Figure 1 (cartoon, rainbow, N blue to C red):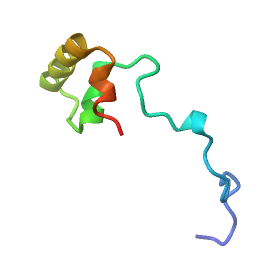
Figure 2: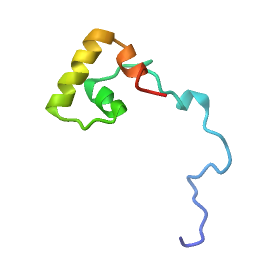
Figure 3: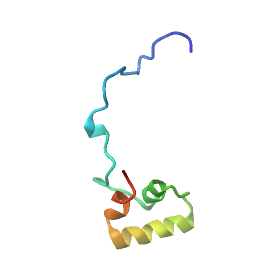
Figure 4: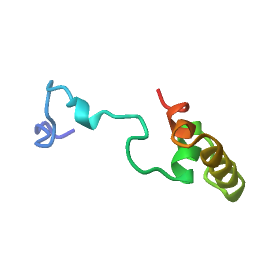
Length: 66
């Protein structure tokens, strides 16, 4: 550290709720489902995620997120 303040830091200002979303309000992909589940993104896991998305729809991601 060089002692200068970080000009991009917002200090103690909380992050607005509109930026803190964890659900599947928008579009999501099989890669998103893999990452949310903690799995590596590879062909086998992408196929798993696609099956899960086909079966559960938006719940496939919502169930994995806090």
